[in-house]
Amino acid sequence: MDRLIRILMKQVEEDEGSIDLASFSLRGIKTEASIILKTENVVASGIEIIQQFTERQGIATIFFVKDGDFITRKGEIGKLSGDAYKILLTERTLLNTLALMFSTATVTRRFAQKLKHAKIAATRKVILGSSLFQKLSVIHGGGDSHRFNLSECVMLKDNHLKIYGSVEKAIRAIRKMVSFTKKIEVEVENLENALEAVEAGADIVMLDNLTPEEVRKISGEVKRKNPNVIIEVSGGITEENLTEYDLETVDLISTSRLTFGGVFVDLSLEIQR
Image (cartoon, rainbow, N blue to C red; front, side, top):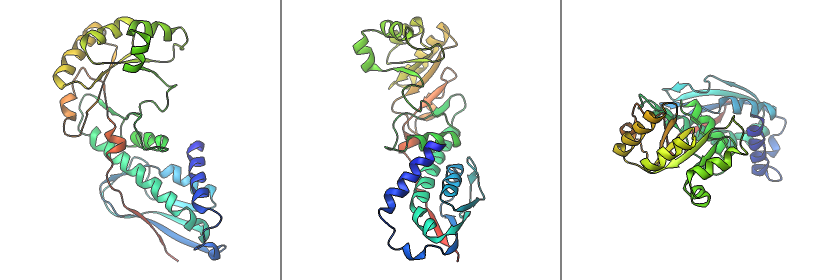
């Protein structure tokens, strides 16, 4: 959490420049403000982060919603009190953060509610500089964050395999230097490579850019070979075709639509006195 707070503090510093010219003369004046949600049917996310962020700025904050809450109505979701300069200085960073995180969590919930068998997951395709915020929002929306960074899990993609030469060679080389605590995932595009990955000891097989029919066939064969192997499906997944991939033999469906297909969430900060 501290890392996220530091990112927001840096954003305020950049936003301020030398001084906030419009607000400088208001230093020392105590004021109160409301955070107003102007969009219905959204999932709250970023509440705990903003609470800690504003406290670091010397602003007292009370929220009436918590992370993961589904908010059906427009209206006041929080109150701020403190120095007018500080509140006005942090306003845009605060609202931008909540809008992005509400949006990501809301889209994730929408996808998650359509699934019966698999769990929805994010990918590493995120808005530049916002990865940690969006991945956290995916969790608040009921999804799986996937990897937060490259060191959390070994993922062998097509470019890796071209250099290693084969799935077997890649996994053999990686096993020599990777701890037993790390899972190995292999991206495949056909049954032959999927079975090769299972035989070589892959923990996760990602079926990439395949049709629902191909996924059904390959995932079924993999599960028969080793029912403990995790099957992830990715590539070309949309809200419209999502349920076609929601098979009993599929564990995870990952899509960048969670982090790039956001809904517009409108928030404002209104000074009360």
